[in-house]
Length: 381
Image 1 (cartoon, rainbow, N blue to C red):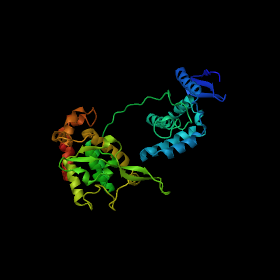
Image 2: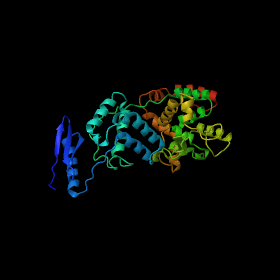
Image 3: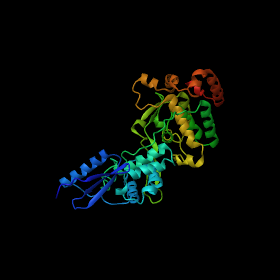
Image 4: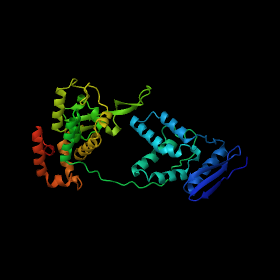
């Protein structure tokens, strides 16, 4: 067989390569944003043909591949897989569904980005393209490249809008008290959950998995090593269910300092609990509460727990490593960590007002807290 040279052809702003397979069949590949990428790909193909290792890409429609890819994923969290499914079915399949994978190139992906950027936020757009890249050329899972449907990355070189960095402004103590009041009006464990969240910055799913055995009463810490997470099931009735498992990431395994008012609340809850070593927050039947319960029962919950988590994280942070010494444990307490971080807060209601009007805030919150029979939020800081 004569040595092949192939060809690189420019059409508009994109580059294409043309070559012949060992069987003499002419092939085209598109999706290269510059000549260098096209030349690199052409060299790779010609090398494979010359060494006899060339395998012709298989043909399959994107819609079929996408559904197979979703079903094959087993090493991702249920919530992540659910997000992938939503992106694939609502964004990717409507656009690429009828196309063969071999027809998806740089031009097709760039046009998709240009169209979708008019409909969704920049963050959502980035999430969609990341999902598409994982499907096509991801290192984990049955990507299109691994299965022989693609030979290159069509998302490479695609121009994306720049992400806009926004500053998080946590709620003020007065706003947190309003959230606590809202939880009390809703009834159930909502009020106490919001109170704990405001002092610790825990995620909602971490609070729902918190047990009395996780409370280190001596060192005044909460040991966070589990969370309620979505898990895929195949019982023919449900697609997902909530189970207690590991937290969101490795860094989520941590110890969080607990203020005295939080420990007092936990002691009071434990005294009336059916199981003094079981879940801190449970339903009327004593079983775990599903996160869906809040979404279905109240529209207040979704921003509520996130606001309180932001509030607690900004004023006390969260520790990603165990406290191994008495001094480290002391620095991990709520009061000490607030004192060291207060001067670093930005010029927001949380930063400026706390630095310049501390005494006024203290009197206001202490007055409110005296009615609650507890130490004031600002006072314990």
